[in-house]
Every structure is written in structure tokens, then in C-alpha cells.
Image: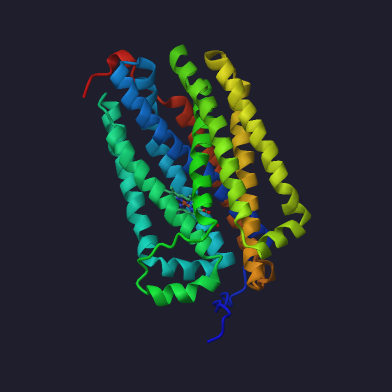
Length: 378
Ligand code: HEM
């Protein structure tokens, strides 16, 4: 048998829009997906700890903060899911022949994501309703966090396995039932940890933004801004550590391809610059606490987004470099653009994003939280 991997052919139907447009759309929505997913995981961690600590120590600001988090999480989860579906479609268009194969190889796990998402969502709702009644919700929070971290592991595994056609045949011979979840690829665990440590960064930045922009007591604002700053600083340090392992552990041929491109050679430096800027925002938040002003929230939101875009663009470069080593280049896909349909799609896409932004702004301003003295023991 030949030692070369068998790569399924791409769909013969031409693309209805240029490759660059699919790439831009994919990067835009995937960045939003990453921001929200890390925000949700980070807030789950903070909310659980504040709920436990606040009740044990009778700390009103922490208890109120954890209630605020619990009431926001079901809303954030809708954004997480809705920002996940479009990049799944765009990835299938550009890399379907790789993604379908890796998804089938871990089929049982891949299908389980649906049930894990339902479990996460239900736990967030149950936790939110307990918090609204002044009861402890950390147990449901922990359930949602464990399910979310597991989903993240399944995603990281699939997104890594799709880049390794040379491993597919042996994996299928070893287990054709789709029940194995391989974890021996040296890039996988750093990649997963990179995504998880981003939860501290985005969760922290989210605390700074909401701490400043939402109406609340000075005590709550001080707590959210201070702890948000500390988390953001810790998060970028951990992400930089995990990210350097992701790059370092890439196969030599992939690294060569990345370094041969001036763009991908420079991008890690830009990313480090953004990481330092996020850390500076975190330090400013730590020092200003309840005195933090609106511009800090604006800077935290903007930098959080740019930092994630940098991650998504480099991640895309790793995928293209890995697949070009296998002889696949998405830029070679046949295109027969259908411009009226593309323009109609772009119009609805932009309107959709504006509506989502407007709903987020309304939700940010409208969240009402019971004052801490109304909280009763569960
Ligand atoms: C709690 C729920 C979820 C979590 C924790 C989560 C986590 C993740 C993580 C960690 C990655 C990055 C994997 C990597 O590159 O290493 C990822 C990518 C992705 N997620 Fe999610 N996800 C969730 C829900 C969803 C849902 C519901 C969808 C859509 C149906 C979705 C669609 C995607 C897509 C399409 C990608 C990667 C796209 C690409 O590589 O081009 N996610 N997700």
C-alpha cells in the first residue's frame, strides 16, 4: 500500500463567490465566535467562584456580581451559537473534503457536541433562574463549564485532525466506529489550552467593559474592573505561552511555509504587540478600579476584538500551510461568481450583524440586578 495519504476530492461544483470573500466572512464571524466563547467560559469560571466566595464570606459585591453574570450567560450563549454556525458553513465550502473526513473519524464525539451544547445551554438557564431567585447557582455553572471545556476539546481535536490526512488511514484501521478522540498530535493540547486561557483574557476584558458600562454600585464596579484587569493580564501571559508551543510544535514543513511568507512571519510580532496592549489595559484597570472611565471600556472592547482577529488570521495561515504541504490550496478552487446572490447575501449579512450589535447594546444597558440586600439564602 502506498505511504501517501488519500485526500478526498473537493466538491466539483464551483464556488458562487471568490475565495477571498469566503475567507473574509469566515474570519469575521469566527473572530466573533471566539470572543464570545472565551467570554462565556471565562465568566462561568468567575461567576462560580464569586457565587461560592460571596455566599461563604457574605460579600455583597461578589454575590451581586455573580447574579449579574448568571443572568447574562444565557444571552451570551445565543451569540456563541449564532456566531458558530456561519464559520462552519464557510469552512465546509473551503475545506469540506478535509473537515468531513476528520469529523467522520471522530463521529461519535462530533455528534455529541449537539447534546453537550444543549446541556450547556440548559445548565445556564437553570443557573440563571436560581440566581434570579437569590439561590446558589454555582453547581449548574460548573456543569456548564465542564460541558463547554469538553466541547472545546472536541473542536480542537477535529480542527487539528483535519490537517493530518497522513494519520487518517491508520486511525480508521485502529477504530472505525468514530469513538476515539486522538490526543497525541503535539500541537493539540497547546492549541486547546490556548483557547481555554483565552477565557481569562476575554472574560477579564468582558468584566472591565460591563463593569464600566453597566449601571451598578461603586463596590461592584471596583470588583469587576479590578478582577477583570487581573484576569486579562494573566490570560494574555498564558495565551502567549500556549501560543508559542502551538507554533513551536508545528511540523517543520509547515513552519517553513509560514516563515517563507513575509505576512505570516511578521504576524506573531503584531500579535505580541496586541497582547502587550491588552496587558496594559488590564494593568490600568487594576490601578483605576471604581474610578475607571468609559474610554478604558472602549479600549478593552476594541483591543479584545483586534487581538482575536490576529489569532484567527494566524490560525488560518497554519491551516493553509498544513494543507499546502499535502498539496491542497483553497485558492485553486474553481469560482463562478453569482454576484446578484452574493450582494443579496452581503446585504442581509450586514443587516444581521447590525441587529445583533443593537440587541447586544440594549441588553448591556437594560440588565437589571436585584440589590444585594434582597438576596436570600437558598
Ligand atoms: C459551548 C459551546 C462551544 C464551544 C466551547 C466552542 C469551542 C470552540 C473552540 C475551542 C474552537 C477552536 C478549535 C481550535 O481551532 O482549536 C471552535 C471553533 C469552531 N467552532 Fe465552536 N464552540 C462552541 C459551539 C459552537 C457551535 C454551536 C458551533 C456551530 C454550530 C461552533 C462552530 C465552530 C466552528 C465552525 C469552529 C472552527 C471553524 C474553523 O476552523 O474554520 N461552535 N469552537
